[in-house]
Amino acid sequence: MQQQLSVITLGISDPDRSKRFYGEGFGWTPAFENDEIAFYQMNGFVLGMWLQSALEADMQRQGLGRPGAFALAHNVDSPEAVKQLIDRLVAAGGTLLREGDAPPHGGFRGYVADPDDHAWEIAWNPAWAIDDRGLVTFGV
Image 1 (cartoon, one colour):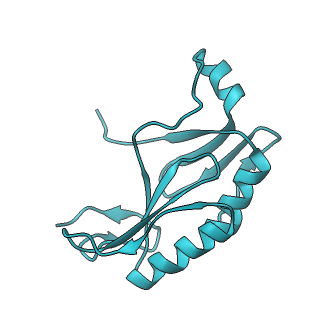
Image 2 (cartoon, rainbow, N blue to C red):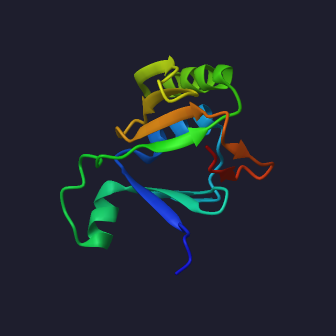
């Protein structure tokens, strides 16, 4: 089976607040949006933000109020870019979880939560190449 990811959908409580965070913070523009959902075309997959109650109804699963034990990651091209993006995300309504710093395994990273408490790692890893399309290649 092909190793690929098509869509990641995050449950959100306020679409306008979410669009502000992703629009002003990351600078992303939805490929599609309505009153309860926004889809962002990413590099090879789609990131969805869907009103939590509608996502619960679609899944037939209640209680999605707290995100799971995961972090999404956005890699950038320098340690300075990590700090700059974290600052923009916080200014756009995010919550600082961890200031940018150098972990023991190398690179530079920090964490921000979006308005619905989904954690984002903002990272620079000198061993991971990012091409012109934004595709990251795992390297060690």
